Length: 90
Image (spheres, rainbow, N blue to C red):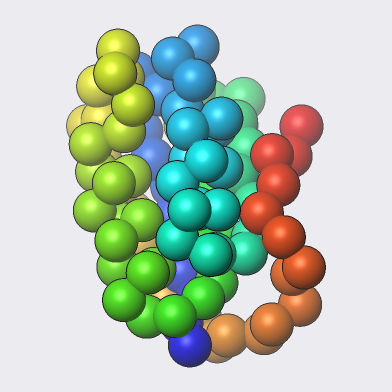
């Protein structure tokens, strides 16, 4: 099992990045959350099987249609298993 904490920058707000991240995370059976930050970035935490976390990392580098991802900063953290689902935080 794997956990990552990700910050995505570029044109990632106002383009359904959070909603699509949630949809993909759920399709990969991942737990965690995604939220917009005041500085224009998106922050995410994903937990799940390593192969599925790796899939969402690759998706985050592309993002949904109309987004333009410039940078993805990834920090691997200790898996906690504390999440019961994947949510959008506000």
